[in-house]
Amino acid sequence: MAELQLRSLEKTYGNGFRAVHGIDLDVEEGEFMVLVGPSGCAKSTTLRMIAGLETVSGGEIRIGDRVVNDLVPGKRGIAMVFQNYALYPHMKVTRNLSFGLKLRKMAKPKIARATEDVSGILEIESLLDRLPKQLSGGQAQRVALGRALIKSPDVFLFDEPLSNLDAKLRASMRVRITDLHKRLRREGRPATVVYVTHDQVEAMTMGDRICVMKDGRIMQVADPRTLYARPANAFVAGFIGMPEMNIVDAVLTREGGVPRLSVDRQTVSVPDGLAHRISAPDGPVRLGIRPQHLDIVPAEAADAFTGEVVNVEFMGHEVNLHVRVGPETLVAVAPSAPEIAAVSRGDRLGLMPRGPQIHLFATGEDGANISLSND
Ligand code: ADP
Ligand code: MG
Image 1 (tube, rainbow, N blue to C red):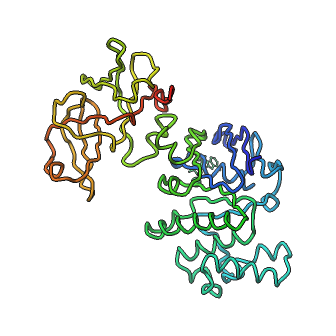
Image 2 (image 1 turned 180 degrees about the vertical axis):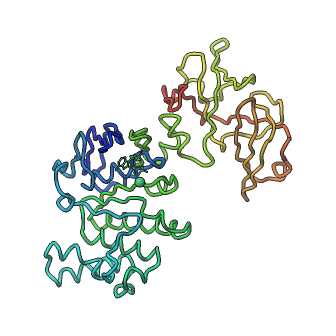
Image 3 (image 1 turned 120 degrees about the vertical axis):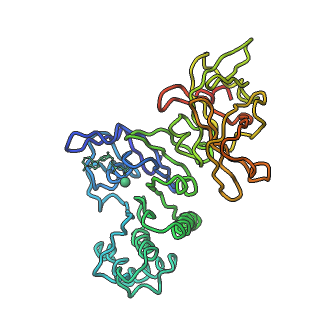
């Protein structure tokens, strides 16, 4: 059975605002689950209900084999790490680490051993005599991590723990946290993690699986590769991947059974490897193509969309070309080869969707992916 289960979980705040709309989620023992989504989609609300810091309006939370809805936080077997570290400001690092164990009345020698163990793992031995105000952001976050780790909780809960750090430190803390997770797994004490972030890079690089949320609902739960290759709907498709997937209005038509796609007044064949997957009837669809899956070809080439270059972003080893096709703008990522370096604003060129990696979505904001069937 899953270590953590959410069943029809709901939250309506006191002011009547319905933040969480009955979500179901299973997190396996030892799994690193990331909750990701735009600001306001109820990631923190969900996490705080799991932690017991927020009441549950409906549904059930199970940790292990217990329903914990009505348990106080201290009895749930969880430890939480916040964005703002939440260290006790008047206590030295040692006491910040050991305080939770002292409250549990653990014997002193055992506490000392646990403190030594955890400070070794997180390389904070040299900081033990400092006060929180004498720590850098990265050091403080390591102490906060240690304070969670020392409790040996059943479930670790993280709420945007790296958001206050600069980009470089964030990158190294990402690795530190995933390494720690792997290490605990290797040592036979796997840590179940629910990690909240709005950052898709954190989600993709840290999660065993990722739960994408929007407006208090779950849009898809899958491992990073599946999420990228087989997004269940246009929302997930647009949220995961950089630059963002092009998702444009298109019309699907069949001529002699062969499906074709039109954007504005330009029509292209559906690439090989995709045609057989399309079961949608003829009519309006949303066409999704990642910028990496558009080849630059001459203007007016067959089976390509032709348009005017409206912006060129030089990224170093790549160039992002923004090309206006009727009312839509398509972004293509091209390697910065000499012939691409010569492209400038105002030029006309063709964009050819490559291979089977394009997607069709039902119309509407979060339209379902209708090109995943028959695989
Ligand atoms: P996230 O962590 O994904 O950014 P939150 O869980 O903090 O989102 O908030 C989800 C929604 O619930 C937001 O629209 C937010 O404004 C609302 N919300 C959060 N806390 C409260 C509260 N105490 N009372 C009313 N609405 C709240
Ligand atoms: Mg939040």
